[in-house]
Image 1 (cartoon, rainbow, N blue to C red):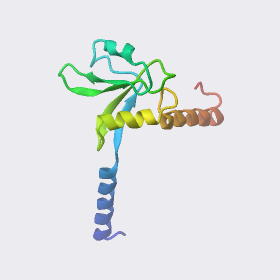
Image 2: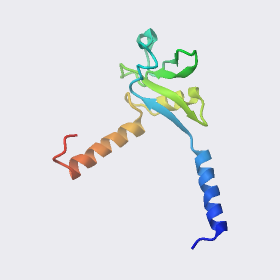
Image 3: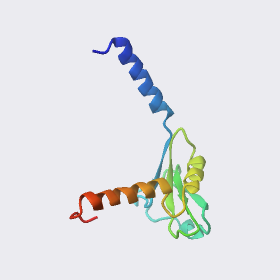
Image 4: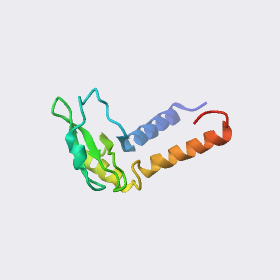
Length: 125
């Protein structure tokens, strides 16, 4: 049985890990409930790294549309998260993109599909 001191220490370590986590959001489609229609600026995203702010009805910046690479025709949408600014999140996202979807997400998707194909061959993936 763990002592009260060791339980308290584990709780403190857990809290430190939670505070140290940096996170932000990336998606390939935007909620149409927030925007009646997507802003016309999407057509102005010419090169990889081009972005513009997505402003909600309240006037608050909710995120940014980012053309993630020169090869992509549709933007990804980046939202601010925890312990990172929106501009930094956009720069980090762009730095991780060889294609439209950032490489860590693309690799996770590829590997999970491969796992399903091997272990569940009858499932439609």
